[in-house]
Image (cartoon, rainbow, N blue to C red; front, side, top):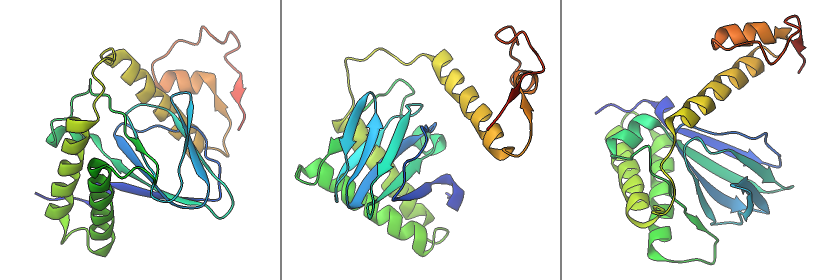
Amino acid sequence: MRTKREQIIFQAFHDQICRSEFSSGLTLFFGLHGNSSIRYQSAEYSMPAGALLVVNPFELYQVNCSENAEMIAMQIPENLLQLASWSRQNVCFCYASSQNEKQEYQTIRVLFATIFQDFFQNPEQNASGIVTNVLKLVDLLTEHFLISDVPKSNTKREETMRRMKRIMDHIHSNWNEDISLRELAAREFLSEAICPDSSSRIWI
């Protein structure tokens, strides 16, 4: 089984406030040091050193790192979630501060650190080990952190979020161009009815 470097994404956060984002895969956050927080599902989660937070697919979040704070995130893509038999209807909740030392959280920390180390040492050589540990991590979340009393995900909502991401990516990739609503509507096969003036521009 071959694992490419770009399949798993690691992102570091340092002294910054990020715009609202989301991913089509699971995103795991790990606090390194300092005072960080994540705005997620209308709540604010403190992320001191050792804290963990898992963000579900297609859920918006916002990262806030104060001065001298650092945090790291790992995105597990859809294809690896499918290998782990993660259902699109799955919703989990996993948050632990550094004071919470339950065995499941400790196991997640160890798997996260191992994946990170293998990924940056030699991702091609360590590909099978990376995949194995990612699958173990997803299985652990499925076994211990699924929420059973939530409504099933709406596929229409997923498509809306995918479309939003494509639009946002296009705007940020073409920030120095005049972008019209007509152009965005045409790219996504949408109606311009919400904007009678088809010459309107989006300024960023």
